[in-house]
Amino acid sequence: MENIVFYFSGTGNSLSAAKTLAEKLGNCRIVSMTRLEKNILDKAYNSIGFVYPTYCWGLPKIVRKFIENIKIKNNKTTYFYSIATYGGIIGNGISQIKELLKDKQKIELNYGTKLKMVANCIIVYNIAENITKILNRSEKKLEQIIIDIKERKHNNVKKSNKIFNKLYQKSITDIPSKDYNVNENCSNCGTCVRLCPVKNIEIIDGKHQFKNYCEQCLSCIHYCPQKAINYKNVTQKRRRYNNPEINYEELIKFNKEGKFEENPV
Image 1: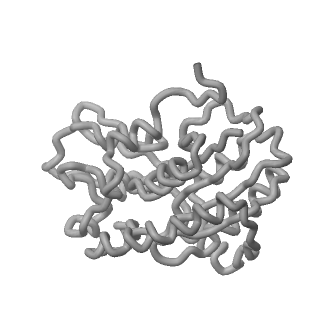
Image 2: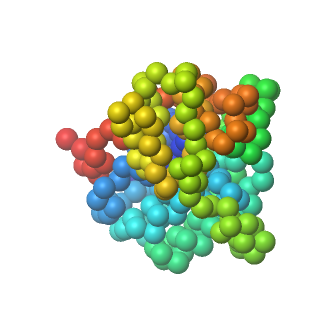
């Protein structure tokens, strides 16, 4: 039977992990959580995986919405697993998806694990300089995770921590449009518009319009070729980051092109 991996990625970390995973598993499709329109899986799958970053010590809003709305059928023998990428503290990044799958889908998460990658929340801190070292460690860790998944290993995921849940509820809020600014280096190339997974950015008459439902992926800041987009007055001098295995054209392609079909022609 076929395997399928659903992912969400802002700067390419989770997409890079999902691509490696799919290649090693074989007979595996990668689908962005931003582009599943039908929201119903009728086929039986050998395994279904979820790969996503940790935001504010928990699930990104877009991942939560995806899990709440997808309908998974014919899954009695399916192996379910999740990989939460993170840079600092994982918090409830794994436990939340386990609890959400159980509550909304009546599905047991068989295996949930974390994968440390480059921390990229540029609005809070600067990006590390030793990214090659961090990614090399991540690659080795992912190798063992893939072995575990191939062997269909099970593990116990702890319940969500109440303190992290409170921090999450307080922090996982929309970033107001007034908090973004665009400087004179902007060339109106439209990269940020094409990258935004929730269509939060428009360019009207040469001026950027940021709406008020930002996902906090911050891909607009990190991938801007002119470093023209910033958050308040804190990111101007900070290093940008995107996973070296994923360029912005590939991220756009995986996130937005085409409609997912279970039986593609």
